Image (cartoon, rainbow, N blue to C red; front, side):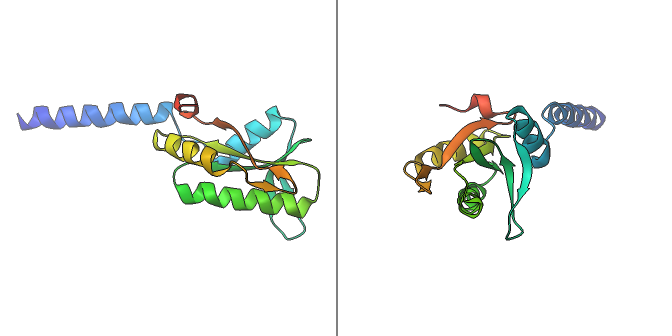
Length: 140
C-alpha cells in the first residue's frame, strides 16, 4: 500500500510539474520585449537620472509590473509618473500589468479603480491591456 501511495504522489508531482511548464513564467524582460516590439516601441529608454522607462512608444511611456502583489502595482504608478515627468515629452503614461495567476485579476481590478483620475502633465495614467497567461481570464 505504501508503494502505491508513493507512486501516486510521484505521478501527481510529475503532472503538476508538466502543468507548470505549460505556463512557464517568463522573465519580465521577455514581456517587455514582445509588447514593445509589437507596439513599435523602444525598450529601456534611459533617463538623465539613471532610471529607464520600460518602453517608449510614439504615444506612451510604459511601465510593466507583475500583479503578484499590490505594492508592485503601486510602485508601477509612481515609476511611470516619474518617467513621464523626466522625459518631458507629450506622451501618455501607461502601465501594463502581467497577470500570471488568478490573484493577479484582483490586483488588476483594484488598479482600474485606483487609476481613475490619476494624471501627470495633464494626461491620465492609462491602464493598458493586461498581458500574461491569465490576463484573458480576468473580468473586464
